Image (cartoon, rainbow, N blue to C red; front, side, top):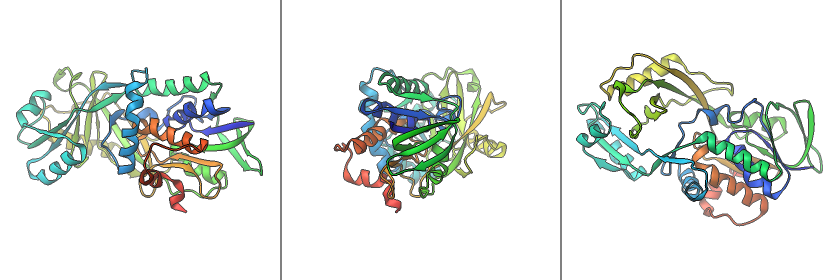
Length: 358
């Protein structure tokens, strides 16, 4: 009998496995042949504590100690620069307040990022306390921690049947049958499908496509010390990555769950919005891809037991905040299962509770 059977080998499922494996027999089933294949493998990989709804911000802030104290080297300095056109003063001031960003002069902004067009980027602000996340290292650390406590992580395991008995869950995946006391749904864009398979009412989770393009270093510049660039309306963002620059149109287009790919027109429109702010023309792409960010109806994460069956645990609806919130989100799951107090405040826990939809 398995204590904790987790469906999904992205950051949501693996971080939960790392927390739960010391508490009982843990098994992670991942449909793909690699961990973090979908949304987790296509993340912008930033830790920005002030980004998201209040409950997401609370999770991210509660995750900061893990990143600061765990001997994993998961974070490296990056910073975020917020940019706005001259006519967007109100939106700029709101962004500075929300993200606790410090306004800087246009001259300072252009010194930090020489390709900026000062006649377009009328306002700029910096939030230095933002970091790159080594997402692959974090995924592997979670899997290693799970295994170190006797847990198993299996890939290439498509779940085809889920049956509820009086005493347990029976799950069939990859031609094998498993029995588990608790079933954790960390299936990302497929979370509602897994719920239906288990006879649980879906939450109404909507996968949203987000596209990325990798372009050569603009003007041949050394990008190592450039911050992430973010339009205050979030119509585009750009981030240095391994000597190149990744640019996203920051779209949220509803999609059915599938192995996503970018829409060429959406990507082109996003690159055009980015290019308004910079002097270097985008002449070619090195690569492009897309991922699905999954949102609940109210855009708060869904963390905890289902309202109809406490043995079915939701770990879903990360909405693009999965990596930066994972340490605290997984700790909340472990606290709920163990019946121990959470460090998160009551309002945050209520906002994350899946039973809010019942």
